[in-house]
Image (cartoon, rainbow, N blue to C red; front, side, top):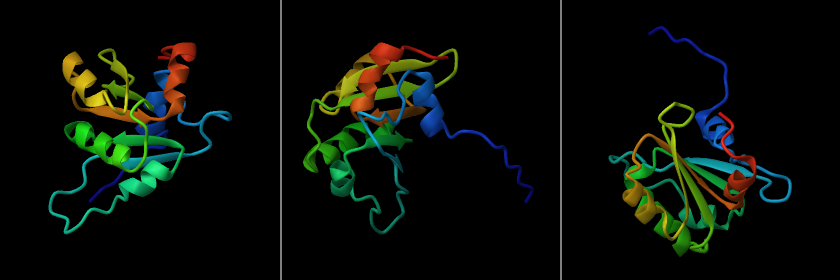
Length: 139
């Protein structure tokens, strides 16, 4: 099997940044955790500890999570994340068809459904989402 490595920046960081949502900020979030929002269906158990993710306090970036958006937001709230914590859902990031929904943990699923957002999307959870109103779209 031939493999080509192309150096670059992960979509988990680049897509939010281009949308005006830096994943860290010196006064809002000192850390970022990147997870899958869709674990393999044939695994015997889940590997993600949603309660620990909820306690983490930094920015959470969820990749491949649109089909489980409501379920994953509910898991975060069950772990202690407040329903008003900001969420950005960025569909088709960095492309001409990019669409963004700014919402909250408690409303993200409903808002994305109403706006017709689907995969592929990068989901950002945390206070850094509020910076979009200052930074705007940086594409």
